[in-house]
View 1 (cartoon, rainbow, N blue to C red):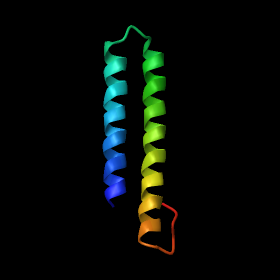
View 2 (view 1 turned 60 degrees about the vertical axis):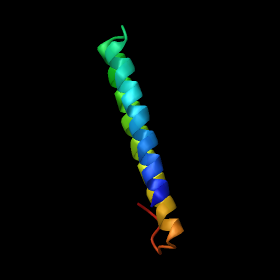
View 3 (view 1 turned 180 degrees about the vertical axis):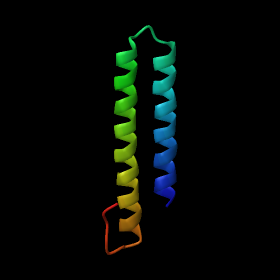
Length: 65
């Protein structure tokens, strides 16, 4: 579970960084939207990976999240 928390903190920090760049930059709304979509996708993937790592650590029968 410690791995999950570390990954969640990393994801949150990355998301805040991207949102800050999108808010302060001179880019179009479309570019900001694409960045947000990318962060959301990456966040979902990282959470799923962390979940699978936790399940592997506790030797769960079903390792899919």
